[in-house]
Structure formats: C-alpha cells, structure tokens
Length: 462
Image 1: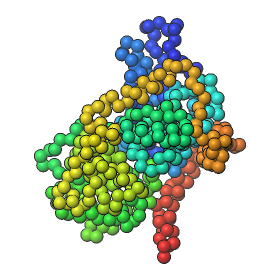
Image 2 (image 1 turned 180 degrees about the horizontal axis):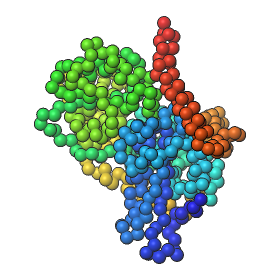
Image 3 (image 1 turned 30 degrees about the horizontal axis):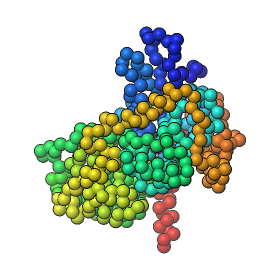
Image 4 (image 1 turned 90 degrees about the vertical axis):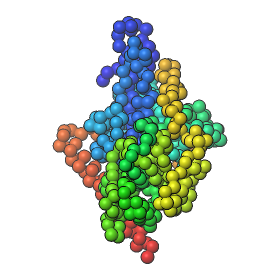
C-alpha cells in the first residue's frame, strides 16, 4: 500500500518535482446522488492544479454503497459526463468503504448519501481514529422541501455541508444554531450539474418535455391523471413534439422508489399514444438542449431548466402541497395548470425568487463554488483536522442513533458489529456466485416494490 500523500507542501520538494496527487473518494447510494457527488468532487478540485506552474493532479475514486437503489451500469452511463469512467466505479458495503478509507489515505471524501448513510459513515470514520483523516464533504442533490431538520442533523459532523443556494444556506444555519450545534460547516454553493447553452428558440421546433419523478405523485390515480393530461396536450397540438422524460427503466431503482412506472401506465392509455408523443431516457442536459417548455410537479430538472432560461412550468393540478414538493416554488411565478398550458400560457419566473435559489441564470454560476473550494483547500492545508463530532451521539440520541448505525452494521460507537466485516472471497468463482445471489436478491426486492406491494395495497382497500 502506498503511503498517504501529505496535505501540506513538502519543503524538500524541488520546484521541478510534480506535486503529489490530491486523492478524492466519492461514495454514493443512487444514480442522482452519484451524479451530484462526482460533479461536486470535480468542482471542489478544479483549481487543485494551481496556475499550471505548480500543478497538482487530482485522482477521483468512485464507490457505490450497496443497497436497494444501487445504480446499474446503464444508469451510471446515462447521468452524463462526470469525469469518472463508469467501468472504474465499484460497489462496496459500509464496512468495505471504511476499510478503503483507512487503507487508501484519501485527502477528501464526498458523501453523496441519504442522511442516515451520512451519519453512519461519519461515526464509522470517527471510530477509525486515523492519524490524518480526510476532509469530509456532504450536501443535498436538489431542492430540500421535506425533513429539513432530520436530514440536516444527520449530516452534521461533516467538515463541509454544501447548500445549493443562499436560501438553503440560511435555513441550514438556522436549524443548526437552533439546536445549539456548530453551523460553521454550512457553505453556500450551487447544484453542481447546472450548465448547458442558454435557451434559444429555433424555427420549426416546438418541444414540450414533462420531467417525471419516481415518487411524486405517489398514487396511481394522480400519475394516471398527469399522463392523461400530457397525452391530451399532445393531441391538442399535433405539430408539437411532446416528450415524457423518464428517470429509469422498469426494474431499475433511483434515489426514490417508483412503484408505478409511467411506462406501464402508458401501455393502458385509451386509444394508444399519439404519434407526436414519445417516452425518452438519457441525460437531462441533452433533453433540455431541444426543450421549449419544461413541465414538472417539482423535479430538480426545473432548476436546470431555469438556469438555461428555458420556459418552465410547475403544475398545480394536484394542489400546491408539501408532499408534492411544489410548495417550494411558491413565489416563483412558475405555478400553473395544464388548462393554462393547453391554451398557450408560458410562465415567467420571478427575478427575486430566482436570485435566492442558486440557479445563477444571471451568469454568476462560474463563481458558485469559489467559497467551498477555498474552504476545502484551507482545511487541507491547515494541518491535522480535529476529530469528527456529529451532533447525534449515543448520549444525545440513544433512542435514534443506534438504529441508524445498525442498518449499516455498525455498533453505537461506530465500530463494525461482530461478524459484519465481509471475509475475503477466495477466488473468482465464489465472488461470481456472491454477485449473482446479490443481484437476484436486489431484483426480487424491486419486483416486490413494483408488482407485489401495489397489489397488496389495493387488496387492503377493498
């Protein structure tokens, strides 16, 4: 095992010698969080090479936390260019990840996980008692519209907690300070995957895209309603291309569980789908390249669209409600209904609202990560980091924390539970068998979620 590179400059190194590589690990548990984590790692280290005369290369390792939403190779390839080859991303358990951090000596670790996963990794990393630990970075994939306090306190303890906007940074600090926790880790940045050319209408092109979400809305009736209105919109405007942008194919899982895929509902549309209506997959940025109106209930795709100044609509047809997430867009000027869109209405975003949401439609996006990048650099150059100190401990949350840690096979003190550490697999055959069994179990789980659970739920309503 090569020795860990130093976080500080080597006084013995001559100017002609290259600087040691900055080693970064990204741990993600779903397709969208992988995209967020990998791009965040890149944006936090884009200036590690300095001014070119004293370049420091950056090595980013991709790790996927094994679980029900672990992305498939197809999903990894579909999230777009993140600077890490999908073939070089490997799947690990929580214990394997902790062993990897212990053995590899990373400088920075980006935890792109659900809140409970972040908390477990923080305690697991703290229990390693590393002489020189990595800088720990975490944050949110998109709009934070639910479980604000819960999610934030589960992320407390990281060195950097990224907020995607000034609005979020203010809310995050208020939560931490309100419970007496240190709020200095909160750092304003932006969504790392914003980009693309500003919107420009093209003669002869008229494309409406509905950005579907796996779990919003949740009921069959609501999802069938949205699909019906989208199909009716296509029939009302036969010269308009209407696209249903889907996150995953049946059998794949995303950040949120999808029990009722639109693909299956589309098979039962009366009269079939009109010729100008299509279901599409692929990288959202590529879809937005040809979009003239983006419609959604509350997808983060709305922020990507607004960043590029594409006309954007947030639906009120099912109400403006917290479970839908569209309450986040109150004051945005984007809330409207299918009836108005059918009649040709196009919302205009409120400038003041946009300014607080981090979409940087004013062109300031290039500087959005400057503060976070400088903070990480300061931590790297500041010598030995203090021990990780999450807000939740066995003393402050004895009825909550142990269960979170146990889900990742960790004891209340962050050490592996007895028997949790996976033994080394002696040979390729046994490894292949384990992988086959693992994939079969995951497939059975997904089948249960998408096929069995809805049937049981309907039976219970009889």
